[in-house]
Image (tube, rainbow, N blue to C red; front, side, top):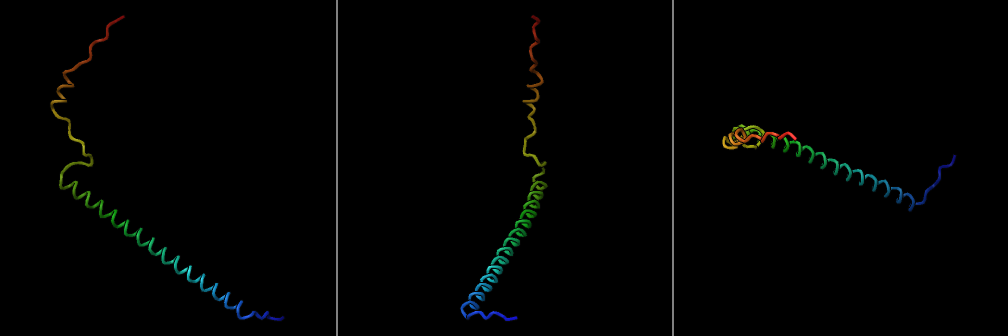
Amino acid sequence: MKIPHLPAAARRQRENGVVAVIVMLMLLALVLGFICANLHALSDLRGELKRVEQKQIRRLGYAATNSAPPSPATTNLSARVQPAPASPQ
């Protein structure tokens, strides 16, 4: 069995191709590393934001909603106003 002898130019091309693949894989690994680091940082920031929100809710002393309680004036007004009785036809 004969081993084919490649010319020097063909060997260099093959070596350059291997180096290019290795460089691309390294760049891909670097980008994936940045993505993972950013996801981890976002997760930490989300947790910190929740802690700050809970701390503010406890400090200000009101529930999760920001709606104001109904005022006595509107409550009394709605109790006094009654719909007119329907007239028979």
